[in-house]
Length: 409
Ligand SMILES: [Mg+2]
Image (cartoon, rainbow, N blue to C red; front, side, top):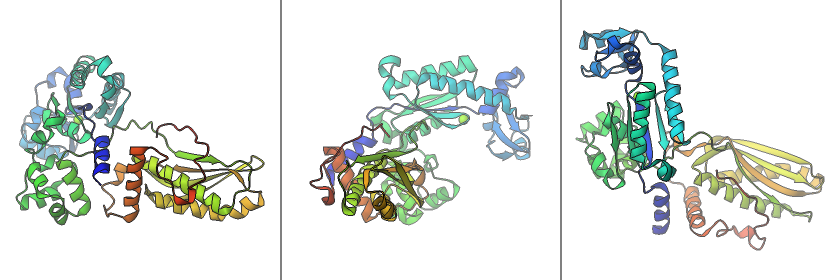
């Protein structure tokens, strides 16, 4: 569907390059050089048996992490080996993250020394993203005494690649209209998910640059690497990466409910309302790029007492049909209780045990399913024309009832 494709791409591809990937350079080694002037400008290895971090002076000799210290010293005999001081690193990390959070509330920490920052909303108060990135680097340098590299791009993936390319102590912006020019000449190893094995498979076929991989097409790539990784790498090679900066403060559950009044509702009516709730929640789940594992049926009886029933699926899902199946099973099991208590005055459904849909992407096969095709078609219609556009036949004529205000998911 042409129209839904457009909707999807405008939602996934913000116009502005406003995601920062900030990554401290050779973090542990830089802290050691900061705290001990004797180590500045020298090849420094932090570690015991294994090199945990190497200064750029050591990396110039081919030292990588993790690497055996003995092997590292054979490459770089003049290197100074220092034992790690974890409490100093953790203190430095805290100070840097304070600067991150002072820059924007939208901070997604990746590890002790790197984070994504979304600065899209800050143009009017703090300037353009690239200026914010420059200020951030200056602050980390002057207030914490450490070099940090920052990539600025429209997506997390490109921002991360940009910071890596800019290292050490660099700043690199990838403007939205130059993404492919930037990405395609890079070696395939720059793509997330290309490890040694995948790189070797690609090299054996003469594919060394991201642009060559992009030109291969998804089908042939999937034939070589398998459908999941093929699809993933093909999307990245065309700079498609829909993941948002995730501050971890998002909601742990989403729910919807429907007040039914005191009139008696048949079992079929209850089931029809449940269909409506499951559809709506499935849509919100996918829109928030979440998956859920637990489905909770909420019931309120005539005497205002409440009861809940829940079911946890073996695997997380964002499928409206899977949610509906679980909800119907719960309702069927609760019917004797509902009859005994004289019917329901409210029916609700919550989805909990939420996770990010993106974290599933590499672990699940990308088999197209009839169910997800139906879901995405319904979602596209709702996004375009509003939530009330599509109603299951079972709900026609029943009205939308009381709609409960919801927080963004
Ligand atoms: Mg780092």
